[in-house]
Length: 204
Ligand code: ADP
Image 1 (cartoon, protein in one colour):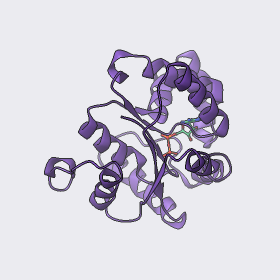
Image 2: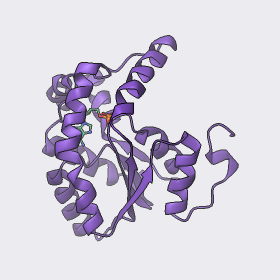
Image 3: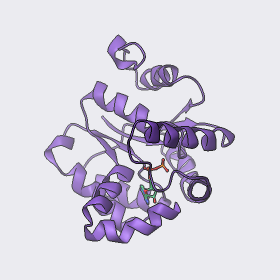
Image 4: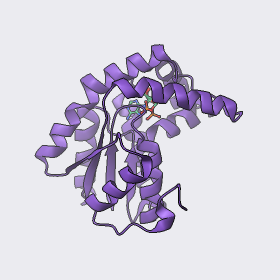
């Protein structure tokens, strides 16, 4: 299956994408993770992206589109993928559609996690605190200032993608405010997948 998961920062995309990827046996492709790995490595992509990420701004379309196309051309993605954090602009979505068409591939669904903005700051602060307590590095952009910029980028540049994919008949919207396992169950139901006990984190 070829899927996209859409939602604002802190909506739980990463957690849900990991569960779907596991269940479907396809890779979870997170552009945020790819870019952070590039920053850590100090590659040209990382150098171009580092300050933008820390400020909460979007990295250029060409850079991320190339990263994603490279990854989906790898053998691991032959049976599908779940994209987490991409596309984030209409330019990225259109470029991606063109590339898929050229490869005679199509998307199966675009899953949207719907949440109200007021919970996002709390979730991100919680995530930063948890990471720190576990001795893990705190993301450079998990602070109120960068989050404001990330939310603004989401609102103005990414939110319009819901309409874009609705028009294409691909959008499936799920309420992301409920407990994690319930969100997973709803996503599985949208894809007509039977949930297994091991798919739900708190049980498995
Ligand atoms: P979140 O969705 O929690 O804000 P991500 O890990 O998906 O975080 O992305 C972190 C940052 O990486 C973004 O704020 C942006 O700077 C950059 N980034 C990730 N994906 C993209 C993309 N598709 N286009 C542009 N920038 C991106």
